[in-house]
Amino acid sequence: MYDMGNYENTAINFIRDYTEFSMHLPDGPISKKAPQYKLEKILQQGIPAKGRPLDDVVEELCRDIMPYGNHNNHPRFFGFIPSTASPISWLGDIITTAYNRHAGSADNQPAIWCVEQELIRWLNNRVGFPEKAGGIFVSGGSMANLTAMTIARDNLLEESDWSRGTAYLSDQTHSSVEKGLKVIGIGSSRIRKIPTDDLFRMDTQALRRAVKEDVENGFMPFLTIATAGTTNTGSVDPLSKIRDICNEYGMWMHVDGAFGASVVLSENYSDMLAGIETADSLSWDAHKWLFQTVGCSMVLVRDQKYMLNSFSVHPEYLKDLEKDGSSINPWDLGIELTRPARCIKLWLTLQVMGCHAISENIEHGIRLAECAEKKLRENSTIEIVSPAQFGIVNFRYAPVGMSERQRNMLNSKISEKILKDGYAGVFTTELNGKKVLRMCIIHPETTLDELKETIELIDRCFTESLEEVGGLWRKIS
Ligand SMILES: Cc1ncc(COP(=O)(O)O)c(C=O)c1O
Image (cartoon, rainbow, N blue to C red; front, top):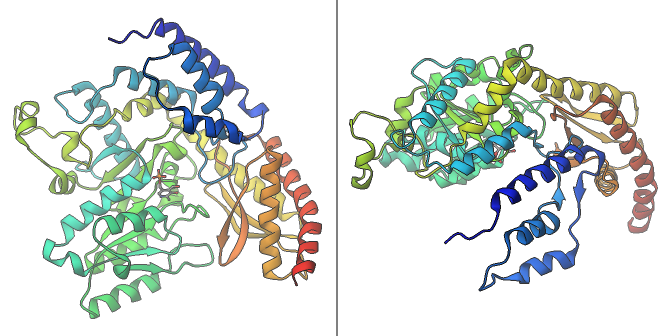
């Protein structure tokens, strides 16, 4: 039935060609623009009645589809949370998909389940969670947050009280949290956005006030979402103080560490996450700062029994796979049934690299961002809007005499020009109403020289943009 010709050779050739492509990635630009006619051709291609030769289709994929777009894994791609995926991880991905195991059941895949459990045990231990803690691999931070918040709701609120439950997050919390809250029935009228301080960390006095007020008004505060490594600025909310408030009001404390939790594996900086061990649950993306390809993330929970309370199921068609009646299956701990063995690539990476190299690679990003901040501070036209935290620095050009509106236009233009140049990827975000340039410098292969060249490029783009924004401004004002 599957007459695909000599697919082994095709696969081997692909691996060889891709390795070559990825080795030379840093020599080229950070993105490749897809010509419009190629996009249109794909949209009109359809599916042939009679199949085409495998080699031809693979060649077409690798020529006309896959190479286009942003190279998020490029060492000079500093936008969003860039990918840091190592070649070991993609090899793990190939192995995982080659075997194509259904990793939803312990009985079905006992050895893979051991790998997952052992990794979860090790990660929980590094976080400082107790022995009874549990966890599961999921596809990403959004799913990890959704899973944890479902557990919080189910374990703290009676179903009849769901409509009174309120949840607390900060004005810097990732949008996936609000999305997840809506999915579990906590709409925007019961989501409280707490303001942040000058380092973009949750203001705990404002949190306490909001919780108290809600209690007085008959609501049932049940969940606070703290962040360890915010998306905009890499800030860590005051975890211990938030824990105290949660204890006082009997609330669940979820920590969104999708980006920053990896810092617990750093030998020199893990104390920046003090208090994370007091969380009830934690999201941790391995595809952000743990060198994995997408999608690989973990949700860890202080006590596994809370996961079972939410997700344990025993339908008749799965009974053959739970013969001893007491075994726990992955499907009892999370939302998915059929799922890939996402743990395998992380296992392979950690076994091959070892803890010390993992720590060094994480710390490289923290230090490079500190170097970037230092260099940027030498320029008196630059304002550091948020200092280097967890590999992220935010800044803007703020020439004297320019209005705030002009400055916003100027910094947007600078980013556009950098992206057009293609040497580096520096995008914008907004902080306190200011358009700022944001660099997330966590790729372990980014060099100090590349960082310096990027800062010089940014400055050249500033000079060019200044005249354009000045001219445009004169025209419209
Ligand atoms: C702090 C934080 N939480 C959650 C997410 C969502 O993660 P994912 O994109 O893997 O769903 C992100 C993504 O950048 C993030 O930075």
